[in-house]
Structures are given as C-alpha cells and as structure tokens.
Length: 85
Image (cartoon, rainbow, N blue to C red; front, side, top):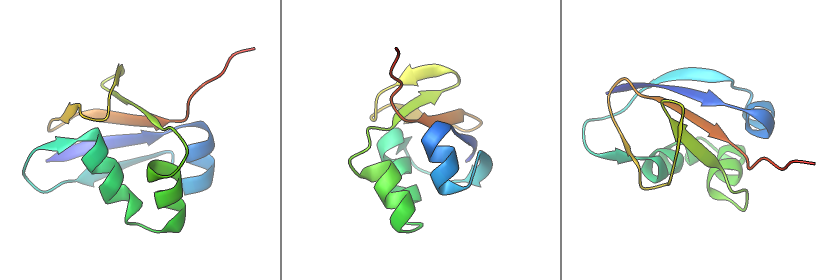
C-alpha cells in the first residue's frame, strides 16, 4: 500500500521533512499504527509523534482520530494542535 505523508509546522521543522511517499506492508493500518512505525525512525521522531506533543492527523483533508483506517492512495497529514489568538 502506498500513501503520501505531509508534515506541518513544528513537525516539519523538527523532522526535516515536509512530504514523503511511503510504502506500507499489507494489512490494516490506522493513524496510531502509522505514528508508531514512524516513531521507530529515531528519538526525534518518537518524541514528536508518540511523545507528549498531541499530534493531530488528517486523511484526505479531513481531521481524523488515531483509530481511523488508512487506505491505499490516501494522503495523510500530521500537524501539532493549533491555537488561536
């Protein structure tokens, strides 16, 4: 399964990625499972995606929860919570 990932704001700066294409093994995938896989890339990845920072996700431009399923061809975006002022 192939998906496109987007990283925004603090995630983009810390991870040094803005976008990437990734191929995932077959099987059911959720946002949480994807975060856990990406967190295995190293300390910064783990801290940003599975640490104290509450990372939000969107699939195909719609906000989703961590148990949302991911399908082949989806666009997944990760971003930190946004505050207004």
